[in-house]
Every structure is written in structure tokens, then in C-alpha cells.
Image (cartoon, rainbow, N blue to C red; front, side, top):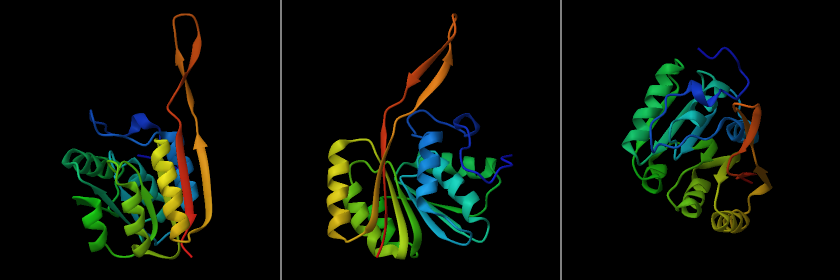
Length: 196
């Protein structure tokens, strides 16, 4: 299906469902690059939504690695499974339930992606720190300024290092009757850091 190793699978290649979010293609590329993934790693995708980050991560860590895709929404879990099948991946396991409870049950991770968390991002970062191996990477996609502030505070408190903040603002082309116009998407801030 997807014949490339580089991240950036077009959004339209994924199965989609109304009210189940997807991390947009260009934001996903930045997030995957910030995680610095390698074959054989264990990766969490917290708030997996459609599973687009899970799929991209699974391709990077190859069959020797494992992605644990967590979401409280049954529709998101089902959609992630559909996308896993569509891309022929067997190294993704879905975990249905509240991330704040499920993280405690998961094996330790080399990298953790945190996305749609329903307002619990700060607490999920705190719990993730205990499950992240030393030298492991955490990558958090943020839309709200308040979330950005609280996450930066907790990363500082937990003494993460190499904290990087990147705001991604994307415009995509759309054909009109008279030419091509650019349509802006909402900016997303990507915070990445390394556990000491």
C-alpha cells in the first residue's frame, strides 16, 4: 500500500470517521521526526484517534518494534484497527480505555506521543514520565495555549532535557473556479523532550 519509509502519508489514504480526529499529514511528519524513532522500539500513541501517528510510527520502528495505541473512544480504536489493516501492519496493539489508568499497565516505552487527551495532558505527561525509558523521547501535539503552558511547567518540574517547541502553521492549496487558493489550517504546537 504505502511503499515509502519516509513519513507523510497523505491524509486521504487513511480511513476516516466523523468526530474521530486525525493528526494532519504535515504535523504528523514533524511529530515523527521529533521522536527520533528506530527499529525495535516500543512506542505509545496516547489519544490515537484515527491511528495516523500509530501507522507512521509502526512503519519507522519496523516489525521488530511495537506501537501501543490508546484511546477512550471505541470509534477511535475501531478506526485505528481499520487503518492498521489497511496498511498491513501487525505491530500495533490497541488499548481501549482512559489513558490515565491504562498507561500504568503498559510496558516501558522508548517514545511516547500524546495527542487528543480531553484536557488531561498535564496528568498524562506526569504518568508517562514514569513509563519512559531513560533517554526516551516524548512528543506532545497541542492546540490550546493553556495546555502549552501547563505542559512546559510539568516538563520543567520533571527535569526533561532538550525541550523543543515548534509551532506548525500549514496552508493547503485548493482549486477554485478561477485558480488556486491557499487555505490555512489551525496552528499546532509540538513540544518534544528527552527524559534524563
